[in-house]
Structures are given as structure tokens and as C-alpha cells.
Image 1 (cartoon, rainbow, N blue to C red):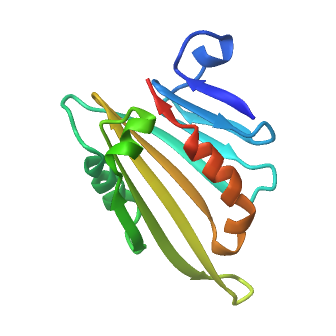
Image 2: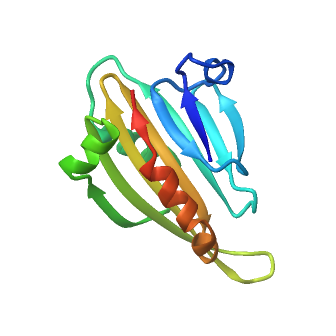
Length: 161
């Protein structure tokens, strides 16, 4: 496992990261790809999923539902919400977040081989001060067991500065 400090300057790697205030531990065999000044993708070595980390900055204090609504209206039209919940005070305290929530989206598509592929996206929304974060985990449902343990470890490592 390697610790990824996003936007925290103690090392050269940290100063090149586009997100600010997010600390997360990622498996060393995963690939990190900078997508934009506010977005990073983490790809497991077995290529069966994708984790996106996106930073949002606001002019006023917001809660995690603001980020959820923004993303739902632009990214998840046609997706089904399978599960949704706000975090507990203890869960928010563990990551030092002002607000946090979890949404699981699902979508089924027909492949070129006429097989139904069930895709799931698990989104965690966190806020602290004027910053918001979306942590998006995407995989086919059949691949979830291959990612589940790494994802749980990764999510348990999240801290906001």
C-alpha cells in the first residue's frame, strides 16, 4: 500500500497532485492517472474497475447532498438508485468530514454478444469547509468480489485535511 497525499506539499509527488486536502491509501499495484486539475482515476492492476476522485470548490458552505444532486443531474440520468444513506456522526468524524453520504447506482446494458451486463457505481460524497469530494467506484457486478477487499481498505483510509 502507498499513501497518496493529494495537494499536501511534504513530498514531490504530493505537490503534483491536483486535489487538495484528501489523504487516501491506495494499493501499490494500482495505477494513478491524473485526468484534470480536479480529478484523479485509480485503476486496479486487474483492470476490473475504476475509482474516480473529484474535487469541488464552493463559494459557500454546502453539504454532501449538493454534490450528489450536481452529479445525478449530469452523470446518472437513466441509472437506478439501489441504495442511499447519510453517514453517521461517527463515520463523519473518522474522516474529519462536515457531511458524508453514500449512493449506489445500477444500470443494465446489452453487450455486443447479447449478454446483459450489470454495472454498479458506488459514490461517496464528502464535504469539509468549502471543498467537496466525490469518490466514485465503478465496476461490473460480477467483478465486485474481486475488488471488494481493496475498496474497503481504501475507503477506511480516507482522511480530509
